[in-house]
Image 1 (cartoon, rainbow over the protein chains, first blue to last red):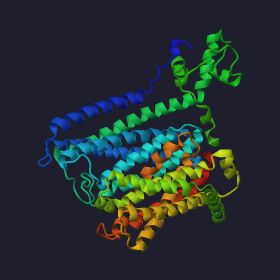
Image 2 (tube, rainbow over the protein chains, first blue to last red):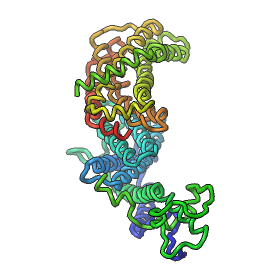
Image 3 (tube, rainbow over the protein chains, first blue to last red):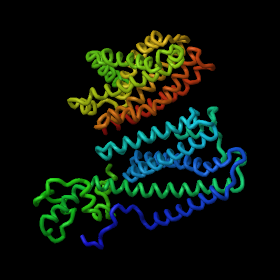
Image 4 (cartoon, helix red, strand yellow):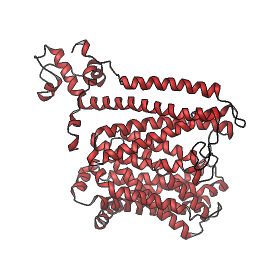
Length: 301
Length: 222
């Protein structure tokens, strides 16, 4: 392997994600400026109203993450569209959704402390959001159980659909039950928004910026999922190939593919090859864009 | 499917009757949970009476975990799960059978726990029709959800820790609805307890549907 053929180890970015990242960063800077300096404080809530530029957008991104997870899970379970790409998208979006859900609960709790006098109350919306977080944490734990990839993906997809049921109930909680949490501020059927001017503009911008951030995070998480999947599939084979190359000059044209098709251990090998060394010693080969063996046969899954 | 369900339920209940794990271990465990609640609340009879319905359903939930783990650990040894897969029984039938067996054990445990909260916490059980209907719907929901998540975690090395992580949050609506219905039945809250049965019924119907449709696939991958 020549140095010029190496890719940066652990790189998950592409030109598109770098542009998206730059846009997101610029958007966050503008949002912070508008939210902290330009937007006026509220007559009743004072400075705490600025949390409205984080909390609703975070909650929406959490719903979006869980929604993408559910749709991707359906696509995986549907035999005609079954592909591990859907499984990876479901996992990536759920993980980002969980992160935004945590931000939602933390920002809501801070707001509640100053508005209601308590960090937490058993309001239907709060309770259901905590429940939503708990069920998707369980979903992520199920994804990490290892074992046969197909079985794990099927179990995860069915669980995702069970978990997603909580999302519409959580969203409608303020309509179905009487609680402390206020109703929607922006999207009110047949009514104008409850905020105006710079507050309205900043809040709308927060949805745009958080959507960019969501997309950027999901794309990077998706790339990591792909690497992990490739490491599971090919890591051992590539580690063997590296050891064989260390033991002596490799025959002309020898590649990891030939190593996998021939005898696995032909020469003297060190007794231990940890997964950490696999990553360190063969980063380019693991990260190189090449079709996964099982993806070539996805139609037969 | 129904015939297969009866076969599987009969098999599971026969195993339980012969091993007597439910009567010798799970039922005493349920009563110990009530005692621990009593210690935790410092023998305050007023508090215990008022939160008795909630404690009852938390204890039922903990017993559900044991019953579900027991139901699937029975088939972990000697390739029994492979035998079940190769038996040719309908996946939905196996699900209904296992859920019915778990539900039957839960009904017995609920009777023990109801006796416990009457004696230990001084609960006054009234409106038997509402109480029994609540028990029936909540038990079906717990058994169905427990069976779905039980088979998901059955073949995994981390099944003992994963099952509570999956099942406890999902079963929260059951604990909420059943507790509220019981509180209304014993007159500790105002309002009709019957409206909570809609939540319990919807939950049970949802997990019964998921189980009948997906259990075969999940069992294949377990």
